[in-house]
Image 1 (tube, rainbow, N blue to C red):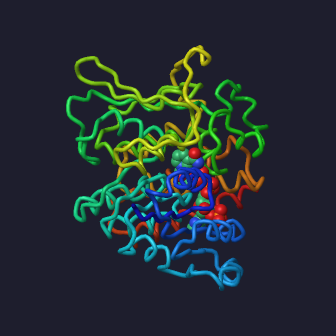
Image 2: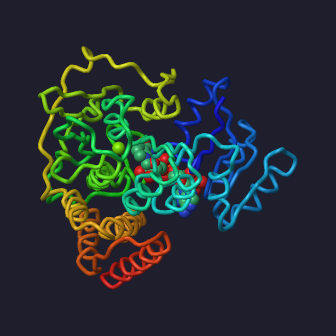
Image 3: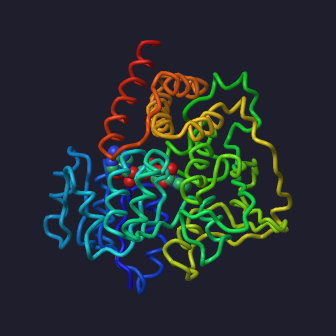
Length: 390
Ligand code: NDP
Ligand code: MG
């Protein structure tokens, strides 16, 4: 029996994780859950899974959750440090990091510091704080298991002896697949008219709003290149991207002898999350089984780096190193939020990200406090730039 803490439990990754846990009550006990604004859902989840702790990180929602759970055995927490304490709790075996965005960075580092097994969905934290996360994991012996489907695919292909953070042996390079998002075939001149509703309607994956927009701009693949760089200790030139609209092959490892290992399956996050939660054991879930005959075709295309500027920006930021990925990540969070709020156009997301990368100097990553100060500065500058152009 493993005890599990899930940060961001009220989101899409939270749903998929809890769907698997629900099927295996003999193997998992939910010890703690967190939500941000969705108090109603957190209350419902607490009633079902009866965790020892819940954290509601949005202050306004705290009283509602506290009141609703006042007669239950679940303790309700909020405020600075509550998420860190939740994941570092000595009773917790597995931490699923499923908060969206840089808001997940503190608790990811807290889990790593506590030497936990960290099932990592929150890619933004490793993009921004890659050097800190990997160094700390080495010091504490924390085990990081990627849940992002591409990285989980590569992790599966590398085999059970592979140690995360080390350069895999006899591997020439890796290929991350990208669905291409909803606008793969849309002419660039039509990007100006893309609405938030169109951008979040992903053709293959059912995900939260932010990552759906990132998939549409291909920033998601850019963030994943940086994520792969840290998890698999590989340089820019050894991380390839190929557009594969069917999203059946989730990524590939290209070995020195010409063998290519790929992991396949229907596009459903329950598959990589099952692998993560199972820690080497295969767990049944509700995902469909792959039927290749009815699938018919699998296609592959070169990614258009000019049309999808964000992909190029991510590669550039990774090569620049230091704080550049953190700057890009923070700027992107602001520009995506502005797009979703109807303040900027779809094609301007990359434009603002590029401008901020140009303005802010790259230095080396010093500490979590340094990254948090930088994050606040980038957010403020990106917001100001957007406001000044409206
Ligand atoms: P969702 O938007 O569906 O869920 C986000 C979760 O984070 C919710 O629980 C939300 O709480 C919580 N949250 C939001 N803001 C804050 C904050 N400021 N502080 C604390 N918690 C917060 O996102 P997804 O589940 O889609 O994505 C989660 C992470 O997983 C992202 O990093 C994404 O890139 C990654 N990922 C997701 C995939 C997917 O298929 N969904 C695939 C691969 C990676 P509430 O709703 O209560 O406000
Ligand atoms: Mg992915």
